[in-house]
Image 1: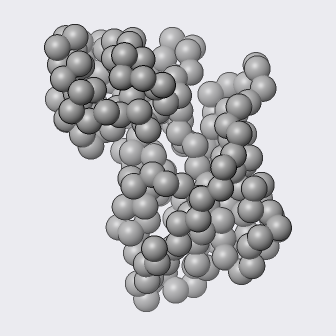
Image 2: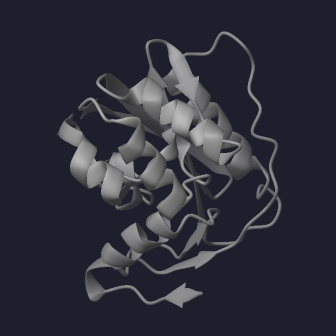
Length: 198
């Protein structure tokens, strides 16, 4: 898949997006960026003792390192999003029941969404992260189970998509970047991209 840039963004190199997330792809399209999706299998384990911010950046960097010897003039963009509540890091659920359990943990609480981003360009790695606070109202088991059955959110950290039903009915407010919760902090990303050659 290739997407042509607007004239505003022609100074930004072509992007290799190392993500199968349709949400990240849509965000880049909305930013009018020229990108191509290229996927590589990467072990997403991480050392014990890292903060949520360090975990997200660590995994994003590992994803970028998989492209180290294979890119030319493009910029490789990798990202990893995690959800953290009460000190517990929630990744992607393994089963629908696991997804229900995660959402029950999040129900009625404030959690953090952390996205780590890594840009690999001209043999240099530039890593950064963004953090958003998400306030969930108390949700019933019926609401949660219905969402998981309908949307099967096994590809989403914390078991939900903010743009889907559970986000629309369950989130009371957000402090921070909305797009960060979707999966890519576009505001910070754009600032980094326009300064790549400076």
